[in-house]
Image (cartoon, rainbow, N blue to C red; front, side, top):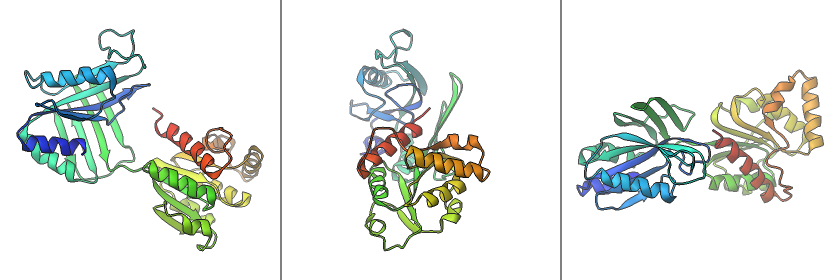
Length: 313
């Protein structure tokens, strides 16, 4: 049961609920933007805003709202022993800002709309929260803090991160398998025959296409939710794809290969007029350097690096 479904079920029983939403977070905060938790007037609860002593104390604060409500308000939690005023009691460093929303049955229509929707835009503020079904952002979360009593937090529900994989070999299958578990929408491209065994057997990709690598750029949109990995079967085709994508504004662009292969491709592209500074955005050799050997190990190294990029503040 999601937080929204829980709230709907409790409001239908005329129970009051306090919704807590992490609207901003920094550093190693255990609660990240978008984390939610709901507590009802019977003490039942669901979700999480980070766990530990901090969460326990905030749940107790939420319960106090059933006795004497403060209305909508924010509470900052600093996870450091040095800050006494807003200390969470945790020492993991970082901080988070949590918005509290007391809810009663009058909120049931909007809660029902949210719980039944697969996608849409939620806007939280000091005045309340709004919901509509439009999807028009390449960012999952947007926080705007103007003052203690003037702020907004926008969440794109149904937000997807897109992974585009050039090359349909064995590593591509492992990458697709792992990123499906991570919730990415996966598209695999190759320029060989669609009867290629690993192309046919990749049941994890959402889409698979045989394309001309010279037209690679037209298949890749731009945005902060776009991730691209290049792992074609040949040195020449890797170079061809990279040349056409290096100007794309994407969140991540990586290319698989040895140090020697990468250096060779970069040198040839520089000779064709690609400026040196553009290679700084390319993660090559791809992934984290964990001495990976097998397709599954390589997939882990790529996933680890992309997760690090995705979650970077």
